Length: 331
Image (cartoon, rainbow, N blue to C red; front, side):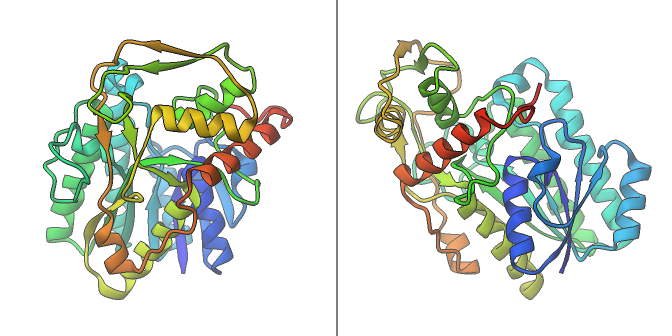
């Protein structure tokens, strides 16, 4: 199958691109390299371009004639979205519409969309099923919900078939240590924890210890990036076989607290780094746990790396490799 992958040089996209290549698919990556890296594209070819360049985008799609599109290109930092909402609506909404417009004009039917658990906001109960009300509490989550609604409306009147995958907390790195997170400013807990262990920051801040959880810190469902990648391939196969559009959660169905992550990270790294405790951040839900029953039932997804120690070990190996990889971090 010929697959066009936007954002395929970034963290999650590059892992999916590697898997696509391993499974014999023909891949073309379209990425502006604002947060991605050319060295991370391990399969297929790379076209450097922006989704707001409508001519280049349409010409590239027309020349390549893909069977399907996977869309990872987006701005993803929650806190940044509250400071720069227009940037998020432009990149995540307007540019996604540019892509969908080009696809529908060229008759490209199959679309796998990178969505998020941030669509749920602060849910009333856990685990969270796909029928949980969508109540995003930040512009990032809202942009993803908006495109899900756009997809539903287009699919009702055009030959567009889509799967939207709502990610929970993606972490870890390629078990072969070829690719991983390489953002200039880390916002994910596990990455920040490991950078603290490496001495890149003096201490790790924990925001809130009075949540209604076992140890008072937030609980999250951490999914290894390679398991998330396999979910994308299976979702694409399901879409091609059935032609049925759907939305599916991606997580393991259980969670770990902030203190759990810190304790395992200290065991994996052998570093007793400094942790500081401070007040809650606005809008942090106490707990976010995925109900991924639908994904497993419909696609046969069976994760291989449901182990917090393994997730952190792969991320730690990558961070150690990255410190010696000159010029790989974003400026």
